[in-house]
Length: 234
Ligand code: OAD
Image (cartoon, rainbow, N blue to C red; front, top):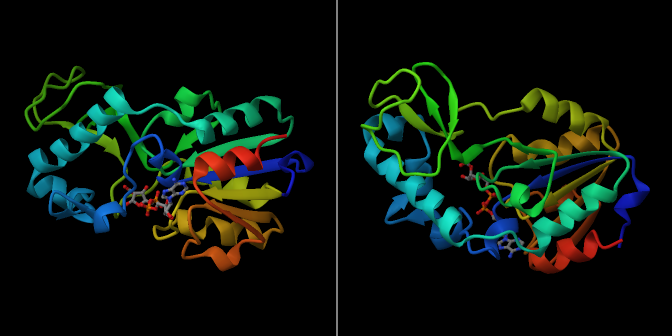
């Protein structure tokens, strides 16, 4: 296996597959359906305008599941352990809205699709930590209005977070590693091409080949708790 310690600047991209063995369903499990709704239909600003209670319920359930039953697995902790001993540049970009990387000990995490444990006030734009369910009549603690809170999640059609920093990291890294993502959602699906365009070595660690698997120089397939742990075991 390639030794990541032989590189100077590493960018990691993770997706739902790294949290699957922690008991959190991936997006495209169950054919991409949640209680009969297409996942895309509860993850858009239009869906929220149309039926805020449905969208709040979807994220409230996912938040409670994260808080009650999900713990970091050995893939999350392997990444954190690697980061601690690595003396080059390191950034971990995740599409996941759970906090299992942080719970596992990772430091340089960027949540490009937002975070389940945060809410945003659409009136003041302020972001709050939350652990309790919110709904369409929840009162915001900053402006004391009801109905202004939304999940702090980047929905389809919205701009992912931290993009400037991410593009800078991708174009200057010498190793890009994609873990547990199907490669179906842009811009994350295009990160491998961007990293390749400036000469980075590219690696895919996944349960099965992703849509963009031919873009990777090295590929290792199997459950994240096995392949990620092996890859970062130095
Ligand atoms: P997907 O559900 O599309 O893909 C999950 C990937 O994880 C697939 O490639 C699986 O093969 C792989 N996988 C499943 N179990 C695994 C395991 N135990 N070990 C390793 N890999 C495993 O999830 P994402 O690619 O993360 O966006 O989805 C990307 C984005 O689409 C999400 O962030 C979300 C979604 O709609 C937004 O909500 C904006």
